[in-house]
Image 1 (tube, rainbow, N blue to C red):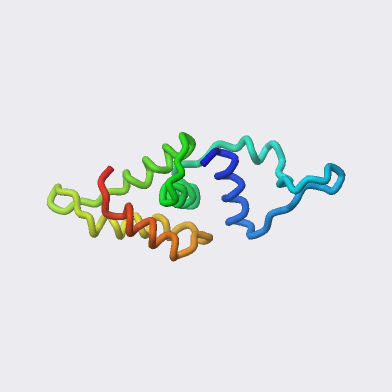
Image 2 (image 1 turned 180 degrees about the horizontal axis):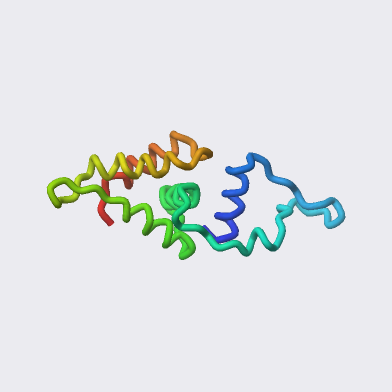
Length: 119
């Protein structure tokens, strides 16, 4: 998923609407400002992590998501010094739950596939 796709998806998920370009050019392209497109991807944002992990779930991956992927898999819980899959799953679920626009069914699929994995 390219940086632009991530940002467009984030805008769509966050605002719930997508504005089409003005009629003067006759295209259906998205009307987004250059400033918006040039913003860096925040790998610590739960919504960014959600979008990147959803892309991974579909088999799509790009370099822009490496930080978000690293953030997701850095959420690890231990018990007596050993990796604890159940606690890790719950911590990752809580983190993704901080993205209010993330659909619960997709979060569930992400967690089913990656929630208990060590990377």
